Length: 115
Length: 115
Image 1 (tube, one colour):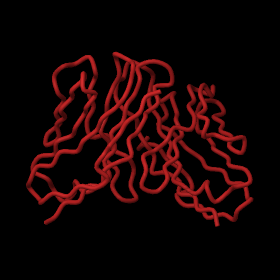
Image 2: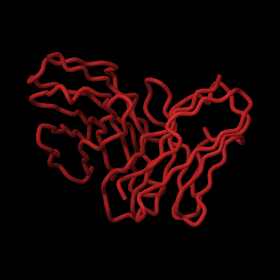
Image 3: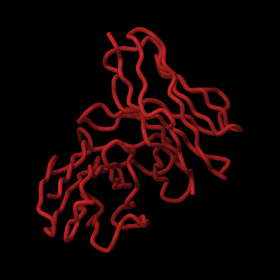
Image 4: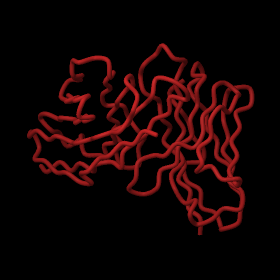
């Protein structure tokens, strides 16, 4: 593994369309996080998985957002009926179990533009 | 809920000089971790330095050091001998030791290095 991979790097979609992003974490990392970063701001937490279980969701994650992590490996983040306000960078990060008190390994992000 | 504040949206420094980026945070927890992350343009978030709250000694990593003042809830980053490659957005982040252990980020400081 060379790091956390995110696909696609860029996505332009029309308002009202559905989009899905993928994150492949470092294989031995069982914790996976999604963040959203708008232009000029710091990332904001969206949701967290430990293995395949989604253990916490931010209030930022409206009903139009859904995330999955089947089999505790890769994760997908889907946005339904996109709105212009959804335009942002979506970052994925992973880390291993507690005991390793380091930060996270981040992916390069998926930049979403809703037109 | 924890909050992180970076009051300097932009900073600039001459190459080879020293610059200090400020960060304050608010928490009721006694044990936690603090981080500085670097985000170069269009590139992924990279960990610069971390500090465990239970340690009184300030962390250092080569040209990067922190001034951690727990009582004042202050966590500044000092970059010595600034290099052109240090130009980036710098984010201060807080992490609890319990629960999801998600990162709470500040708004960021854009650092420019003048040759």
